[in-house]
Length: 157
Length: 132
Image (tube, rainbow over all chains, first blue to last red; front, side, top):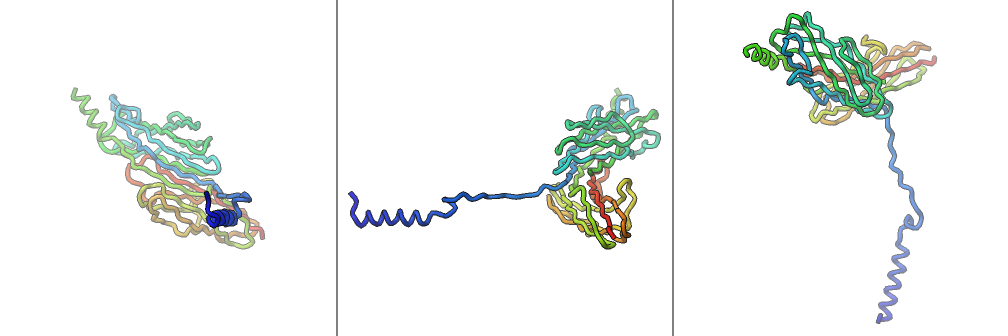
């Protein structure tokens, strides 16, 4: 049983509640979260490369035991970029007389065998990881010391 | 046995431990038209590293690495905090009437660590045509 004044209070509450319903609940509102994607490229050398000497002593390579290839992560927005690798350079005690080469591969389509010249890779997807193997050969062998195989990777359109 | 040991030691000595390198830049392509001798552009430099890194930005020719004296970049060297971005102002000057001037602005670490194998850089292609 509802006491009359309570009943009227309840109906009044309902009326107030209805009048307080936001206008947007009755009429749908479109919510827009906007944004613009521009062409950006982020290059990250995510894994360092390591070369070790071969049992024959005439080759330094990422493929020898203890060696690891370098990995370069490409994250682009907007348009697929192009990665240009410069020709290979080498430093170290026996760099003179050595032949340095790099090879490239990726899920996105990079594919280049060992070469001392540069490599141009038109990336087929916005996100890719390029694996870079390196080797250097010297018929006279390698004196002890620190060696580096170097290349500049340029991301552009 | 001694020979294998020698090769192992030589292998350890020859290990290249290359520190990481990273840089982000955009947009990668900007075009503009002007009726005067000067044109300004804006690019955004991004530091993907989890720590503060100093970057350098420089202007070079479209097809090779010839420095472009007509282009000023502000700032040219930038110390960016971890995963921070910064706007770069690029001003191309002395553009004669009717000329289409194309160049690139590249960014990379100011001092790549010794031993780095792959030096990462990103270049934006900029072009401006002076109409009159």
